[in-house]
Length: 257
Ligand code: SF4
Image (cartoon, rainbow, N blue to C red; front, side, top):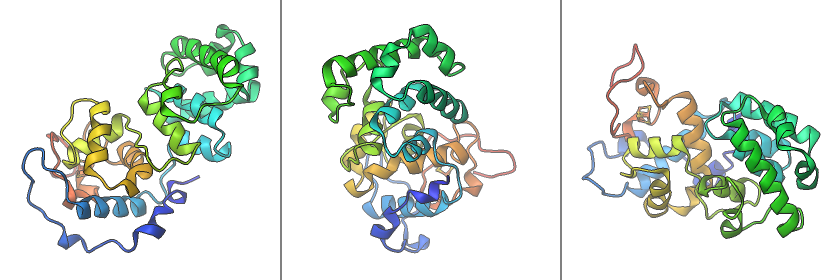
């Protein structure tokens, strides 16, 4: 299952403009990126991620036919956890308890055993159990479809809520910002922010809404493969001409800044 399946956005976006037409000089502090720069980066990434593996939660959303419950649980498990581990743990858990009702009947210890070795598995098991209890008691066994209601669930922050709204409910009005999106948005020079929460709000201002549902998929895939936290592969990066490389001091060996 490859990331290339997702960019239906290409059909809407038209052909990417020639790279040489993009401005190459750095912008002033805090200036928003030009709309055409964002468009060029997004269109280029849509093509570049063709062939890369989908991020774990995207993969689960596809496999589970966008079941909001599976998207919610896998996103809860995914924090600070390798994709392969998230995928395996989510699969084990869904095979034993595919619904909120079934999950709410498991003990925390059972959930812990099923999701181990995801990071903070004890903490996450308590959140999964409590979340399922609330889904059953307050929401009739369904996952709510609003940010406000999602944020009432234990362990659910804006990142998880946004991803559920985008992947399970098809929202076009949300941006999901995780550590990859936060880091790359700042390196690109699209935002100058200190936290993912600030980045989310800044991206609503600095990017056209047509890109919002795709920002997470494109930047997470790029962040896992090229624009890695340490030693990004800048020389191999297809969006380098549009990137200000803010804060990048060391890149992957054998490449040049
Ligand atoms: S040029 Fe380097 S810092 Fe910029 S997006 Fe590419 S890998 Fe990341």
